[in-house]
Image 1 (cartoon, rainbow, N blue to C red):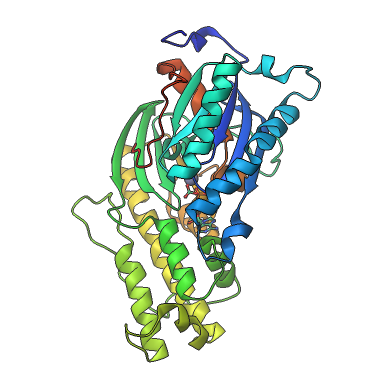
Image 2: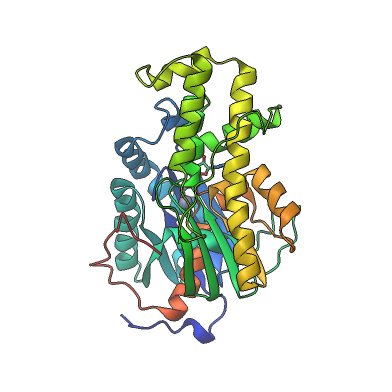
Length: 367
Ligand code: KG4
Ligand code: ZN
């Protein structure tokens, strides 16, 4: 097993990406970190919807059931005419963290086993960092947007259900974390506020949709957190302020079960609370991105993670940022394995291969 990769001078390197950190079972093949050859995602959203959030044991069991068929489908779509599709794969990249332990284990054990029996180099990948690489993928299927390779320095706003970070990339694997959330991630705040308002999981798309039906964004003035590092985030105060406001509207106090409040709200009240919350959450993200843009003068700004799909975030960034942003298609903003395969390529150029007998998950892996 080589200790360093030999890919620096090679082209047409196909990496199989595997992603199972939360509630999506995904596999994808990406060539040279950029060309999307296949992208298969089986989402468990419908399974978890009835519980109002992800149930870890249910998620792990569901990953086991579909993991191998998802990988087979990704290989079949990438190489429809190849007899032995595995001969086309140069390495395997798998999410090793952060995420839910049971979910991560399914992907990592599968990748370790395949690396051994198919004799492929294995790379353990950081899921949060990988979200940024959705922006490095050329998705030929999406003809609605031009694709331009992000140029360094790249300012990245990473906004998902588990993470909210601003990072400045001078090159691949040469980045500075400018700030991060001190409590809830912004996607988590969307999900929790949606729950209080009686909207479906996942909360982000539900809130966006109901606000688009109308809603007064200034009906309620929710607070923005002030932190000593201007690039850090905090959304737990905003989430609690929304809950308190809903209690006031309903004439109930903290002793009243929060999951019963939604039944007392009119649809107009739901829309106004959702619109006022979304405005402040998004303004917070944009304020800090704008400040970092002016301080660090990046050549490119990218937005990564599930919340990058938010239309109000895109609208405010377009209105306030002096440069245009090219967004990854929505199916690459939310969890997928193409971003894992893409980062796997740049990772392989710079990092040691992982030992398939030893690669461990890390549920709280940081950037
Ligand atoms: O990146 P992702 O798919 O998974 C994580 O790594 O967490 O992000 C999921 C998060 C959820 O919190 C979901 O509510 C949020 O992204 N999200 C959105 C939108 N679409 C997904 N938030 C706001 N607006 C959206 N359109
Ligand atoms: Zn994610």
